Length: 374
Image 1 (cartoon, rainbow, N blue to C red):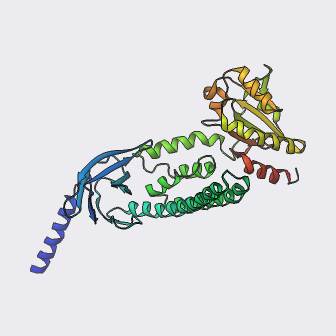
Image 2 (cartoon, one colour):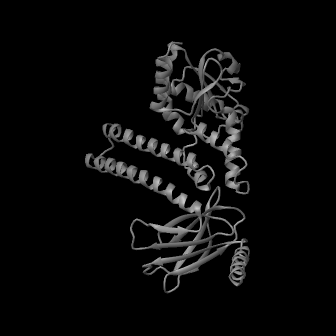
Image 3 (cartoon, rainbow, N blue to C red):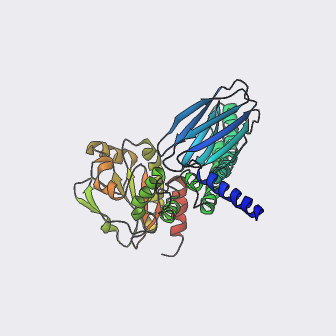
């Protein structure tokens, strides 16, 4: 009986200690081996728009430090020790233990007390792997260009496909990571590293899947709202109809292209990336217009004379329209255009089948589309 009483007492004591755990803040207890001249450790918080220092502390003589911080929601934080930065995810109630060795050139670290922090480490391994691959490609290209004394198109043709393949492999690895970690904030932070232009359908689908999760995290909720706004004009949806003024002052309607392939091309005379892409758009239009490819240019210019001059200078021979209101025009707002160049390719049934494709990607899409029996 005495043993039972003792066992019961131990159980009650453990419950009491657990229930007394401070859930109004999280703590990070750290050890830095071989700190050398390092004196101060910084705690940074990452929100949807910036990374900012929220606390700092002095390193003890034996390389110890501790932070205690209140978090209104689970979020991404960073520890900065000199030039090194370490990611972690924390929420109130977490007791996190952190260890690193500043002599380790790989910046390896161990962290316990936060499962999501282990997952963010896994994502960082993916990011660092492909980052190193692309740094190597860029360095080799620059060294060979310097040896030639100029930039070389032939070198670019060799190294650009390697770079693009690395980026594609990275994005596929990130998509798998996100799919495997939908219930973790690490999955969200990984998803936000993807090119929203190129991977919008996947990000829209992901946003749908995490609705109801991370409700107190403003970054997540802002992302979900952003994807909800993009969804009506994402791939697979019906293109919303519109009417705007043509360059000749007559109405231009998307409905005029019903039953045809048409690319709505958002651009402007003042947009250098747009003007640089225009020769490629002209080339593809001339190659595929006889096969049924149409373009409707929508300018974000505000001055008609600038718009007209750019059309003439760039030899843009397709139909053109504009609200002459920049990004605030009704057509731009309808299609949620937030950057240019931006385009939407619509099939004869009125569905958006491609979005924001330029350069070689546009040519490849058109070759694939018009090689099929129409």
